[in-house]
Length: 232
Image (cartoon, rainbow, N blue to C red; front, side, top):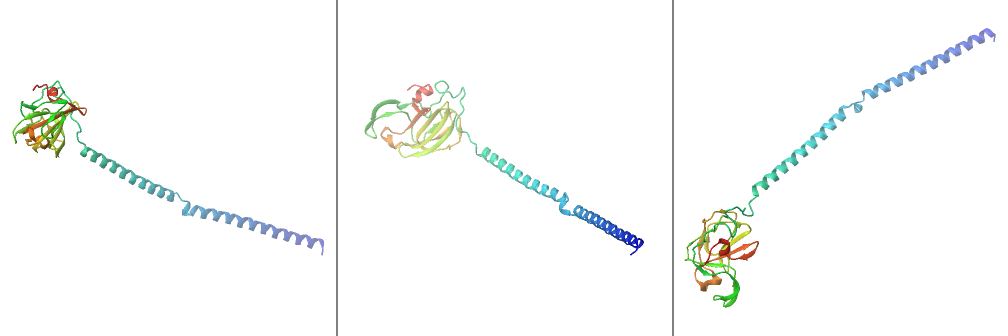
């Protein structure tokens, strides 16, 4: 082969190799271009999914908040509806030993207050009489000795129907021996209001018809006449 033909053949081979390299570069560029375009068009990578998820999470959180607020409001309303006074406020009109008190039925005392043991004609034994018995007739009206809050009304097997009234200043009076009561627990009464009618006292039946009045300050028995500023 002549030198001229050899150079021509070498030149053709070089051109062919160069063409192949160019085609490879162009192919690689096209692959990169289409790959990038596909990723950009992929909806998974779009921000729409993130926005929708955030909106749903916000809606769920909002619903829980509203429910909790409704529950709290209902509970507060229920508490307000069931709240009742538990004691009588004290004032210058219902201070034990100082203010004016009314007799509960009459001024006649059948049996006075004593912590000493005395003969009980009904029970036939000696016992203290931590109360004052006021004379009366069956059916007589029994009145509140001062303003107060009725804390209990019940029937006792020994003392008949009893009405307990908080008169303020930690003073509680028990009106025992009633035949009927016209007040109920939670009622507010004023001085002189009727609380019931007089009946009988089974455990003191030998002493006749009377009102058995007990007064306590801080749960300790005290003489009702002293509290009311009265004398026998």
